Amino acid sequence: MTVWLAGQRVTAALLNNDAGQWTAYTPTWTSSGGAAPSLGNGTLDGEYSLNGSTCTVRIGLIGGSTTTWGGGQHRFNLPFTAASLVNSNFAWMGAAVGTDAGNAYYPGVCRVFSGGTFVMPLSPTTSTGSAPGEWNATRPFTWGNGDYMALEVTYKPA
Image (cartoon, rainbow, N blue to C red):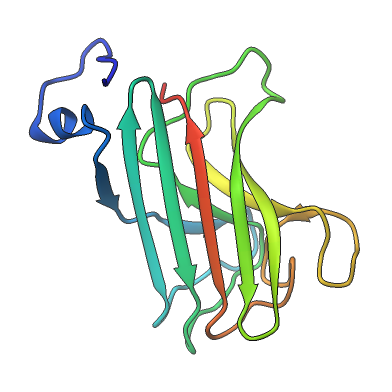
């Protein structure tokens, strides 16, 4: 059951969300700085489900031959701003996996900062075993054509 928030209007989409149905949305892919990523002929897909007072988001990205991976850490917008937590250092956490097509899988996590509007994937190590960090054009590996990332996070909307 959806928790209705002050100021919300009853719409067909909100009524559908009462049943926890999935709703498609197109995430925006940006970076924390440097050159912006460009999807080119890649595929970016997203959907969310509101269930009670939580929102679960699923995002998938497959790089194409003309995809460029940007200069900063990857960020994907959320369908709703996340609620603030008791400390700004806390985050809503989820799962991530990166696939270096034909080579290896890289497990990770994704996080939404307290009061945040985007989700960021990160890994415990890179393909060379170096320090953890947010995913970018070369972390956890050098992304290219056919490489895939999947993110899923559950958080409370503001």
